[in-house]
Image (tube, rainbow, N blue to C red; front, side):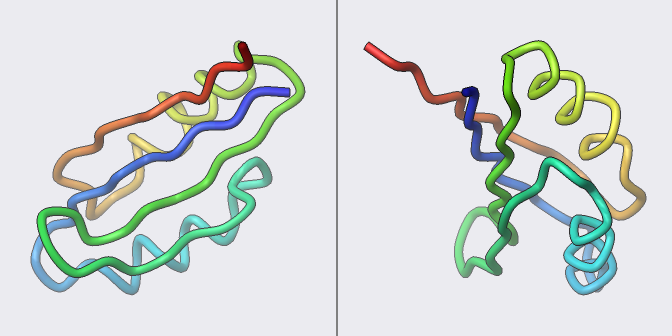
Length: 77
């Protein structure tokens, strides 16, 4: 199983639109609003790392209203 967290900076006033759009992405298992450097954090979970990275690059990063992202991918040791 692959799990990642995407820290999202939105364009001003787009927080609700991005949050609602994340709810429609199958691999996004949860998302929270943040206060500080980032506006939203999204938890993404997939069976394999390829599906996880594809979701982040193609589904999340392409959302309208996103200015920047930073992705943290968990590793099983």
